[in-house]
Each structure stands twice: as structure tokens, then as C-alpha cells.
Length: 574
Length: 63
Ligand SMILES: Nc1ncnc2c1ncn2[C@@H]1O[C@H](COP(=O)(O)OP(=O)(O)OP(=O)(O)O)[C@@H](O)[C@H]1O
Ligand SMILES: [Mg+2]
Image 1 (tube, chains in turn red, green):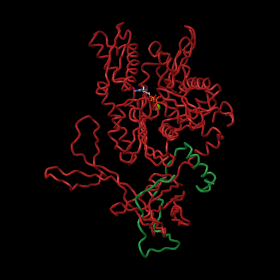
Image 2: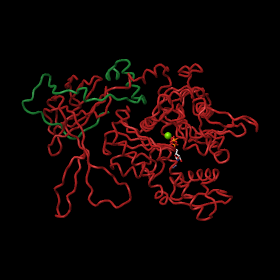
Image 3: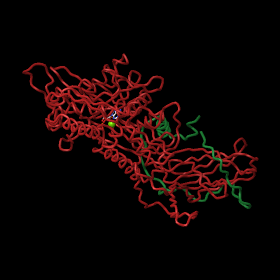
Image 4: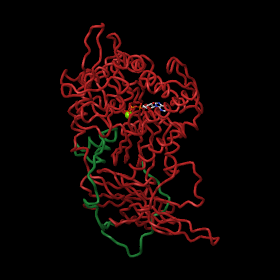
């Protein structure tokens, strides 16, 4: 892939996982198959994606971020999304307070003074060069930490990165002397980070990954099936993200400042504005941990110092519209996937903004109690949302580091990755306590084939000859509306299908309706595929049913009494 | 790694019979499936890719 130098031989690689965000980047490696995030020489694990030049000296990360106040014109920030893009199609909103993007030689560029000396000419650098310089620093930090030159990386990218953007990123990494083993999707890296934990159980589940960053929020619905991941839907938003929360605090403290001191609005002066932004972000982060946070800036405007405090409740009130935006985004993508919130087993909160307790709590309100919300404030064992992607990337890097580049290319080719996924579940029919037929899923809908799943099902209490009925199944949402309480005892409940019921779920603090309708996911038995008999099962016995769905949708059923000899095997041709 | 289900299977209806005790009734047709892309990430995908490239089945892979 890298055109400059021959790629290292698999045995000589030193690999890392790398995330390269518009706001922050991070690097990780694995030790005994466990991911560890690497701190750079400043001690940072979240390294601001910023490059700054002062007197010809190059700074990156937090040090460069600090120069946004004193040296904004020679500081380049928020550039990752410009890689591989035409100037016409970029959104420069976030570059007002630092070097401005411009069009030069047909690409997005920045003009900065990167050389020493008063009379040195400024350089106009394409975003590819800025990226390469920044990546080189990250690789340098990782190499210093590991004590070996890092040669290769798995890098995470948003799900809507176009081919040109991917190519530009691989080329920029190549310029930085870094072999890109693979580009992987950010949400999938986050799921992998969770699944790879020793206590992580591989199961069939629907996962929503809400990646709430600094300048963008990206949400995906992932069908996780036996450790294989299929993205069912994605949504992207550039309005509701971390910067919008900073803005709310900036406005809040600017107004407070004006009320107290009068004079000039700190938002009208570039330097004051930069200070206001920096401290507002710090205050915002502090509010994720504590109930109160302070805000303090020396010489905020016209030489006047300003100090204040804010409590979490006040913050959550003024930031409510942004928080509501996150909920709407998540709801929209679940709908886009053709699913209901009841179908979602897990919500993984990823990205820096996901540290905010209110956001996790609000998402908790739209999903049923059975959905696990994986965020620091809701689940004590949650992984740091800022580290999920880089951990996943490091794990993937260690999995593939021994592969020849050709093998990686072949394995990630559409011929291998694009496969049929079953629309319906495949399972067996059991009996409920009241003797009604119920569907027991074995292979879940949206499972990629070939697939193999096994269940152990109880036989009738007294044993004997048992029917194994293989059927397709599907879910629907059953809504039970309580009758108006007028006539006292109202046992008769109205049941209707939820197909087009409006689900304006209300996550606000308003008083809830007394009588809530009950929504539940129920399995419906579909068409029968096959029947098998297991004879003479002993009292209290169990039956094992294995379903193999082949690539051509042929279904092979194997079933037997557990612990007994023999069994039945049959093939349902497609 | 099998899921355990407590709800019992039904008893075999009297008179039920089939060759080798297995009777095909329907099938999973192409219109019951959608072509989608699996993410080429994680150990289970790698196992899938290995099987696909060597045209091996799950049980051949187990050995
Ligand atoms: N503890 C925290 N509480 C609240 N917000 C936080 C916290 N830590 C970081 N953030 C915010 O998270 C955002 C950065 O998110 P992240 O590190 O995921 O960046 P990113 O993926 O590079 O962002 P993007 O590409 O969207 O700009 C910033 O707005 C930052 O202020
Ligand atoms: Mg991000």
C-alpha cells in the first residue's frame, strides 16, 4: 500500500491501534492480548489533533492546543475531515479560531509560518502534509513509549468515509512512514473493545454505538452475531456534538461576566473568545465528574479576571436542547435500521462527550430497562468512552500483524465480506406453561451465513417421543393499552399492533402518565421448515438442536438427546 | 456454547412418521435473505474468512 518504502515483513512489524479524530487522537497497543492505551510524553491519552508552530518549532497535542490562545494563526486544528475532500465540500466552521483552510493547488491547504525567523516566508501546506506531520508525531510518541520504531497501524475511520478519504489517509500515513494494515469502522472498533474483555461474552445481540465527539456525532446500529459484526444503519450529525455544549457554557459565562463587570463582550474579541472556549471545555469536563465546577480565567476581557461556578443541574437545564438532539439522533437510526428500541440489547457510548452523565441517563429513558447502557455513569465496568476505538484498533492490529498485506486485502474483499444474512429467525417450537406453542430462536435474524448455532431444550417432563419442529420466526411489538380507569376493575386490555403507532418517547423530567401502555417484543411462529422426532427420551432429559445455515441457505439440522447415542440429521435444501 | 431453554419441546403427535425420523416441510429461499457486508474485524471474522477462503465447513474447521 505505501508507495514510498517497501512495507515491513510481517515478522518485523511493530503495530499499534490509532484513532485520528478531528478533536483528539489516541494510540494503543496490546500486552498479552489486552489493549493498553499509550500516554504520550505529556502524559496524555487523549491527544488533541492540533499542530502549532512557534519560531519554527513544531508542537502537537495539548501543547499545540494551548497555543490556540496566543498563536492561533500558526495553529492548525480540526482538519481530519478535510483529508481527501474538495475545498468546495468542506465545512470550515470549526477553523475560525485557528489557521483557515484555503484552496491551493486543487486541495485544502493551510498557510502557516512553520520556519524560524521574522523574514521567513509562510508555507502553504496541503491537509495531507499537515496530517502526515501530525501522524508522524503520534507514531514518534508510540515508538518512544514502546522503545521500538512503530511500523504499522490499524486506523479507525467514520462509517461515512469515502474511498477518496480512505486513500488520502493511507497516503498521509505512508508519508509519515506508517504502514496501514487496515482501516476499520469506528463503531465496530468500539464493539470489539467490549467483546475482547475477558468477561465479554460473545452472544447474538443488537448494539447501538453512539459516538459523540467534539465536532460530530455518529450513531450506528450493529448486528453482533457470534462475534461477527454487520452495520445495519448509520446516522451522522454535525450540529449536536461536544462543541455545542462548549458553546452553551461560553454563552452562559459571557453573559454572567457582562452582568457582573459590564464592558466588552468577551465573545467579540478573538483572544477572549479562545480563553472562554478553553475554560468552558474544562468546566464541561469537570461537570461530568462532579456536581459543581468552577470557571476561572485571568484577564478574560479588557484585563478583567473572571471566576464563577456552575452546578450540574443548571448545566443540564441550559444544555437540554443539545441533549435532546442526541436522543433524537439515536432514535432516528434505530428506526432507520427497521428496528424498535425493544430490539436493542446494548447501547455503547463512545467518544469524549459520552462521559456526560445526563446523556447516558437520557438514553436510558428511550430504551427499555432490559437494554444495557454502557457508559461510565451507568455501568461501573464500562470502558472509558474516549479509549474504546483505539483499544479496538490495537486488538485488530495484533490479530492481523502476522498476515501478509495481500492476505489482509483478500480477506477484506467484498467476495468474502458480502454474504447473505437471514431475514427471519430460525428456531424450534416449545410449549409455554399454559401449553401454548412458543418460538425459541436459535439463529437470530440478520445473522450472516454460513452460521451455526446450538441450543439445549428441555424434553417433556416425563420424556418419551419428542417433536423437534424447525420453523422460521419473527418479532413484532405488542402494545397493551390500559382501559380508562372509569369502571373500576379494567382487566380487559386493548391490544393493537405497534407497526405505525407513534413513539414520541418523552425523556424529559415531566410527570409521567399514570397508566403507561405496555410495549413488548413477542415472537411469532412463521412457516415450518422441517420436523424431526427424537424417540424414547428419558425422564428429565434434554434435547440438543444444532442449526447450520450454509452459504447457499441450505439448512442442516442435527438433533439428539443429550447423553444418548444416535440422533437425527437432515438437510433442508434451499 | 449452547443456550439452555427451559420451556419443553412438545411430545411427538401419535401417528407421526417419517423416513429416518426427519421430514422436510419448507425451505429458506433467497428472498428470505439480504446481501449485507460483514465488517472484516475481530477474531470471529478471521475464522469466517479462513473458512471461506479454504472452502471449509464449521466442523472441518473444528478439527
Ligand atoms: N469528561 C468529559 N466530559 C464531557 N465532555 C468531554 C469529556 N472529555 C472529553 N469531552 C469532549 O469530547 C469531545 C471530543 O471527543 P473525542 O475525543 O471523541 O473527539 P473526536 O472523535 O476527535 O471528535 P470529532 O471528530 O467529532 O471532532 C470534546 O468536545 C471534548 O470536550
Ligand atoms: Mg470521533
